[in-house]
Length: 272
Image 1: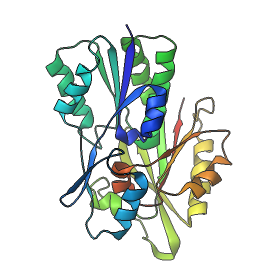
Image 2: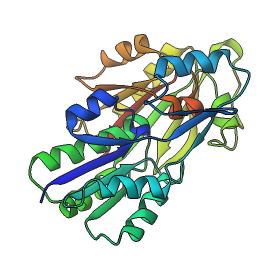
Image 3: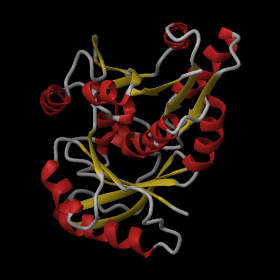
């Protein structure tokens, strides 16, 4: 029996890359007032960030519905399905996938909470693809990836906390100086929870600090891949890549960008 891997669009694979890797993207939605867009499919990343900068309306996002997942499951009636989704702490998408599994009555559908988002989720998906290509069953992939997802963490350097706070993904900014003097906030994503991590003056200082802290972790696993994602800010990704041997790069789409804002940078890595 073959295995089909699906992932939601906040994994930030491009449509072309998803096709190349043989995975199906299930998109979330983003809205500017009454204008609704399908992440990756009806609005490009560049179009979104241009609109974000010019619009007086703060965008909102919507999770994938159980019915949408039922439709996707029905496309692969004879395959094991492994679905990898953003943290349940950030969206109800994982819960929708679980509801659809129950309604489908299928035992060979395996939703997984990646405990992350954007590049953190993407790293988990890439490991599932590797296991699929090694010939493992959906059940075997589910068991291994559930354990692996607990080892992925992420640091994100933002231009501002405004979007995270307004989007309800960060409840407190206590101790943050603000945008005075170019102070850049750093947040962590661990076990699917976004928390304030630190702040540095200037983007490069913040990037350097994140790199140092990751490498200084006693259980940082350099054998596993590192990944980067960015919100229309490739120049800073290029700078980060000089500090690591390699690493895939992902463009933050409209859903992640709604909460991270323009110029955000994320680094995802594995702990042992």
